[in-house]
Image 1 (tube, rainbow over the protein chains, first blue to last red):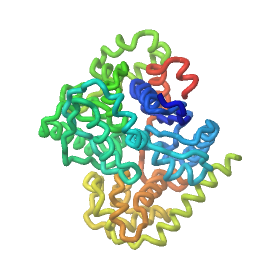
Image 2: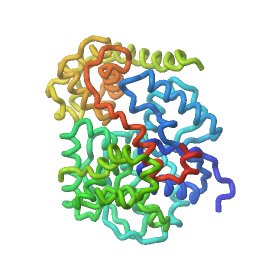
Image 3: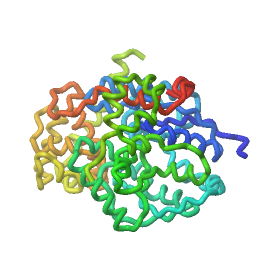
Image 4: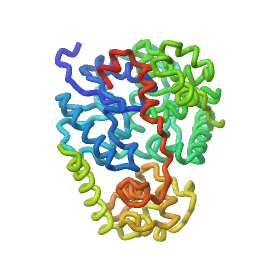
Length: 281
Length: 141
């Protein structure tokens, strides 16, 4: 369909590895709109933004990652994670020689809407509100662009809402629990007041926090990529959400083989508690 | 590139930014007034003009006031402070660098505590094992 596919590096980040369906769907979507993406991510490609308390480590991680992205020898890196994307322009490329252009995935999809539109063939009947943050908009106006993408999906109706949360993504708010409680409560009331069926997140960091609201039976929560994928007929299952909803039952769903790969003790100490944790609604 | 050189470039950039911020901020307090996170501070304040000097003190390597440290602890990088600043100081960068400093990240004494998750990266690796095939893990991560 697109004979001259642009070779790009798809830098998905770290924590989105909880959501394999999102990573796989992004890759399929990129291929379908005319790109040849080389996916990279995980701790070995960490941008270093989580190491504010140790700038020696942060500097080393930034240099290592810029060097690895340079070594891919692709002219453009398409970022999924807003933290990685902003850390690149704030710090990483101030101390390292970046040899590639940076584009955020939402921007890329938005600028290729004409290629994406014909692929959105399946109806996704759903009234949604977008989960919005005030931050990141100066870098990429996702609060404007993502509704444009969602409105291209047959059956999706994007409802307007005035609620905009502080910060640029939700995970950081675990350090300020009172603020996170407010975000969760306001999100539930916004969805209910608007008459929407669901809230749609842009970033995985928000999706991961808000997904507990669905597990707790309050509201439906989706990521915008999942709705695009559904309309395109991509078959990926949101396992993380299923595990969150299952609580203790997640162990049986994941299965012995995968848990053994992680290590039973680590799974029980560090993974299962996260899956069982639900917000106060 | 040698290890000291790696740290040196980032350090030099941060030092230059600190100097720029210290020389251009007029301590008008508009950034504080615009911030949506101030109500969540453990040492709430209302007068930005009284809080910002404490943030600049942290950048100079001095002890920050409780109000300044409380604000730094709840900064979530909303960025609404940036257009609020009449001097184009980039208060988001000011807060980020001051927070790094207060956390002890720039080699000065720690003034605020951050929750460290010792399993942070191992948990990500665990989810990679749960969500990606062995081949994908080998090629992508």
